[in-house]
Image (cartoon, rainbow, N blue to C red):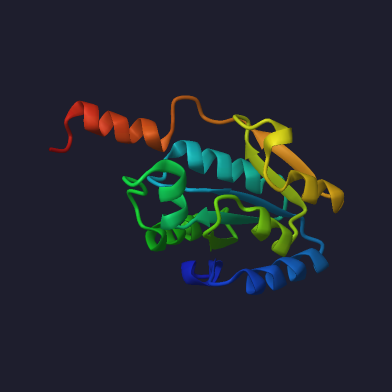
Length: 165
């Protein structure tokens, strides 16, 4: 059985080699990405459904610097080293890798997944990497999100309820 550490890839090229090996073995490789700060049921539901679309699930996780650029200086709450370990601990996640860019475009082009997945809060034409995946014979899909769950909502509730001083 793979350990959590075995699922975390330190660099994109070693991950690309693993993805190619899985594809040569006939596996459909699904890719998705996100910040995954304060993991919640919306994340796990989405990731489990994503895995169900193919044989292997690869998750790209934004670095701390990337999240700060996208969401502001108060984020992330949980550091990248912890976020990737939590992702890798999920049974339905096969590989995890960090990316420091604002979008996963370069990562997607490096690993060449068969299926690219995002939540249905995205329109297909706005999904980063979609054109590349489609041009290479892959699929781009959206999945329904669990209503009412988001990291920002959780943070706001904690602050509003006065759980912290």
